Length: 163
Image 1 (tube, rainbow, N blue to C red):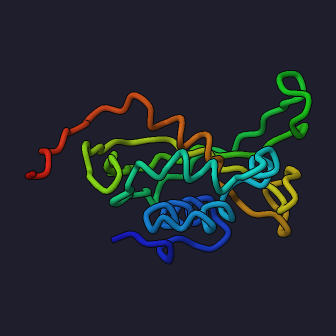
Image 2: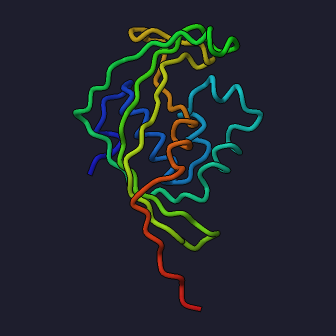
Image 3: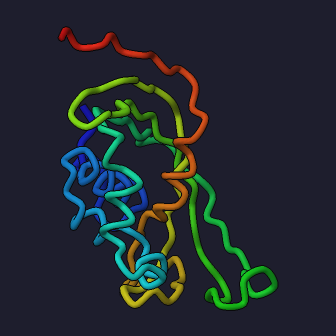
């Protein structure tokens, strides 16, 4: 089984595994810490945003390919979103997830699918960082994860619990 310790510290794979482990444990505070600082700064209540986006999705397990080496991408955002940092360094990682849609404490559907998570290299204050900047870290952009859940395939409706 792949765990957080399966990945080298300071890598995008490790950052994604930490975020997913926090989601699986419903440790919303750990998810906030592992989420992109620029995203956190844009939310009055980032913890509440994560709870709202993920509480009804019970993450059961996930698999990140250790051998997947995505290309680093640099995007100039000034032309699109003037309030964003000028350049963002990111990678998109593919992850296989299995989760259940919950209705309160009762699971209603199970989903197994592959999604793409965007990981961004930033300083803890949300400023962009270069790939070789030792003071920066990789963080998960939560919007990329939550957007991916809409319209997923391989959905299985679970039998209703006996009355």
